[in-house]
Length: 295
Image 1 (cartoon, one colour):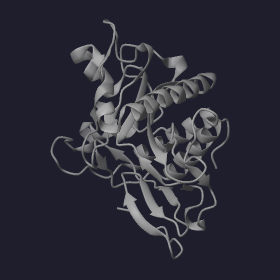
Image 2 (cartoon, helix red, strand yellow):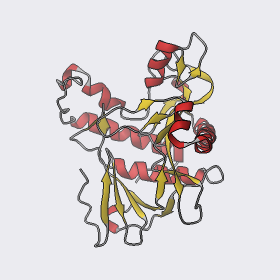
Image 3 (cartoon, rainbow, N blue to C red):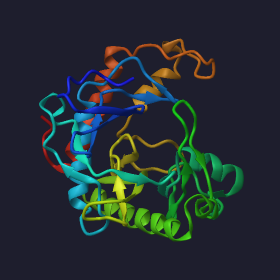
Image 4 (cartoon, rainbow, N blue to C red):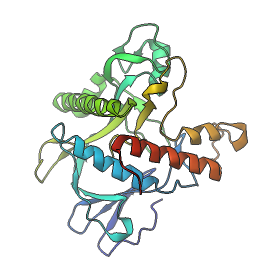
């Protein structure tokens, strides 16, 4: 699935996910490339979103800079081959934890579904009367297993996390995830945005300056991994306006697409209008958070 990036000799393809392509650099570091691919309902769609990979990378870099002092991260350098400049970063290899570290400050998505069924999310009991979009009494750590491509992540409890990674590692994951969420939510709030929920990936560095420590990896706090809502329009009781790929989801499930997401058939190409609206939302999120124009 990886795109053809015309990389110099010596770069070895290791893995391609829904959005990212991972290569080993000649010096043993990892080259993380964010493509313009977009996924929805566990499918990689046939239509890319122009500039999406650059937006995700530049926003991750912005957040890595602002999270210094909270958690170390895997970024080494942005000096990357010319063909992927702006959409790639060189990173330290990590022994990745097999857990998606999700933090929720508000009720939405799969958390809302689980709450409506059990009045809890991943073992975190919650008070009655919460609605779609409600602010939770406090942010909660709601981990999930990493599913293979094409399958859903599965929410798990903190005790199940301990079984997967060990007690000390689970404690680190929970503490760091909540610390990063609180810092990021405060920064987003200053910019008129609600960080409703987000997910992180962590790994243990085996070499380099953070050897033996838990390190923040992958992307961080982008519209692909986070729900951002405009604070001025927040109104619990229904889905909130958001800065992400909701235009894509809405079109795919509308009669206009002619696609049944439960059919097992791949989704159709996206119309230009949906592509343009989705790109605009990603750019808007970047510019609201950073205060900079995206160019």
